[in-house]
Image 1: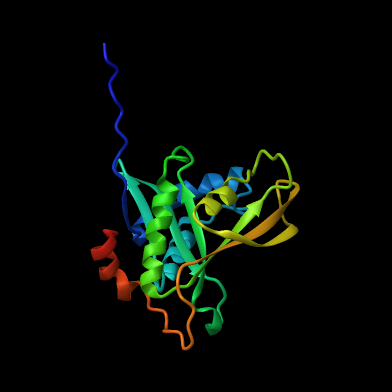
Image 2: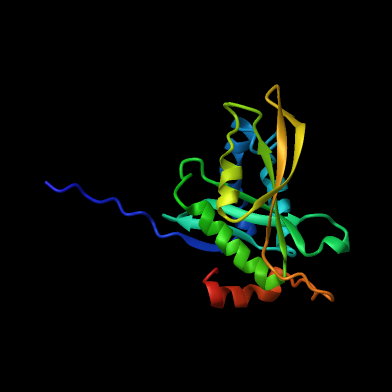
Length: 205
């Protein structure tokens, strides 16, 4: 008898709303409590997490990957630095449900994120990545490998700068250039200004 095929759910990328905060926090919580992927010690409250989302949405995309009627991962960016000279650079963050890793969701999220940022006029995507100093039960080098496959290059490493679970971790910075650096450089648009363009060209809704 032929085995039934298990079809993978269709993944839809959409913009996050504030009502998604609780579900996104459910994805983030295990990373705080059981890994050194984030150096955050305590899981934020739902209200604090909601405020973080609201701050990002004031200027940048905050995207969710949805399938089977639930959120399977999310991605967003924040300002690389607050001063105006850094307006064209952003820091990226991607988290995937711990039960859905290595299923292509992270790549889908990053692709949609990059497309939206290009439309905004962002030029530099910067990734701050916790990095293990050897075999470690709380952290692997998977994130660095993931970003390398997406076209990022290593631009810096800080040694023993993060302390969690009673051990020291390095931090690396990886960078991907996604636009042309000009002089004069056109101003960056907000995500709201390009949302309809992104929806029409790439289907992110």
